[in-house]
Length: 505
Image: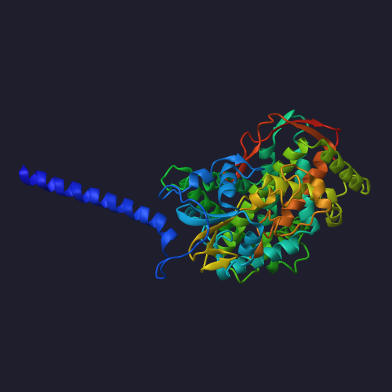
């Protein structure tokens, strides 16, 4: 018994030693960046701040929910105590947080030179390593070049613009007998139908579209969940959903290739028929058809590109729509001016005539409303970067390997940069320039969102029909856009709606 007791005591001491060792290593890892940089002795960071708790740092405070049209208590407190640039410990890493427009611009413009995109590893696990959102270096450059090319080809094409308008009219027609709608759901329905048609050439009534949507909703729930990859958790289900979407997209690609070969074999057939001609026109107008001709991307990169397109075209655009509708409900003067602009545009067209690119370009106040919703609502709060080397900026030294978070919200709501920054005021954009230092709703530099213009077109065309055909009132004024840090309306933005006239134009 004595030997057994001694052995048990030995293992207790070993276990305690391991736990204490791990705890001390966490403490050392947490505070080490303040004192030393490996291989080069003491480092003068010359930035104030706090590292918070070991391991977690100040992450929980940073992620505390707040209205998206405010900076939140964490940033307000830290900026008042430490200035617009400060050090902290977020997402298990020593971090520099920047609320300074000059430093933010410097970071975004030096992507790939001094800084690199660096999102937490769980994001890679769910998006995939070749996603344009997390890829770096040559991979990101190739994906981005393809995206820019596709957007350039697509944005002014009549087929694309007609699809947007048809989908908007269909959504609004479904409201005519509804006294109330959950707008965030309606906006997501609209953006998904638009993007799945544009990217994959699919219509809402096809079974494969329903399948993709079901998996995509599971994927989205996991993307904003705790990154715990245990069977049954939202994160684990999202990883599986992404795999299923990838398989579905690969099958669509293979079917498209087979159909292309069949169409090519039958090119000389005079009896092609109107139905096949229509399919060929639809086929030639979507992203996938163009993507199949790109030989600079691997098969996995093409599949990932499709998923990125669905993600960007679905969530970000629908949230922007909800922001615009929410802010307009509280700004009747802006709503009336917007309505007059669209009535004037409609008066110059035949009944049921589609909008075109020239119409979009003269929607000047609409652009001001969208820009103000982006500034005031802050669809994207911040981005993740990592210093590739020691970076000197002004009197600051950003050590190599540290994470850097340029915070767009703080700049957008800075009263020294925007007069009456805490108000929704679209008229500011009649005289205020959209400088990339003061206004970065879609990021900046080489990682600026390539589909930002497409998102604005969708919102503008939807608004064209919404303001002429409905009046709306928000059911619950406390349903505000909240940053978690991702932004959402807690109750989905419930609207009481009332048609203005019987027919939609």
